[in-house]
Image (tube, rainbow over all chains, first blue to last red; front, side, top):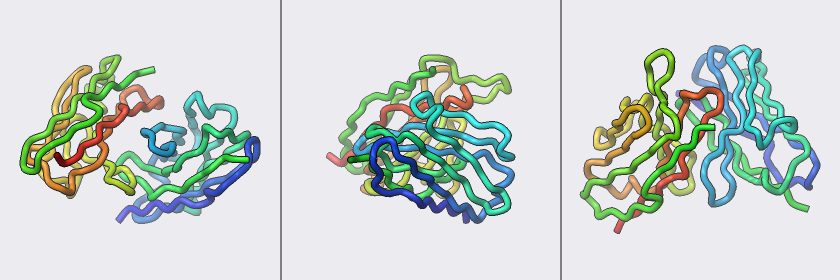
Length: 112
Length: 113
């Protein structure tokens, strides 16, 4: 079955960087667009970024544009999210997702 | 950007009774291919979101048939025919028509009365 396992979350100071990873299995990873979605504590869901199946197209929410970079390595069945210039408002659980399946999420806390 | 507005935001329901959640979009969700990319997600307490319904009315595998989706254009509804204890959680609608700018509704918290 589809498995998406995020890692790389943690506590980081404002303006620092963090890189999230998502290991995918149970489906043909290289055939599917992939997404990052986040959820601030006690809040709703916010789409962050999407990458096409081959990595040629990438799109970002306005709130992260210019600071976050989505990428993928189809040889490793892994999705990434490079987060630079982190702000307190980026504090959230970050989920890796396909159209139909979501990982368990990884918590990113931005705090001094 | 497309704005998705859900109502109610809080939904207390008696076990065994029906429940209904409305989702309205600020623009039509009919895509150029004729499909309407409106999904419903369930997030149980402490869990990741799970997709229940895709393209308005198609249930995902393993989703009980007490869940149904309907609607068209800008108005959509998720119905639960008889609420069970395991249905407690937050429900979100999400539009995928105006790709890549996906947007979610605010969420509706279903609780047992």
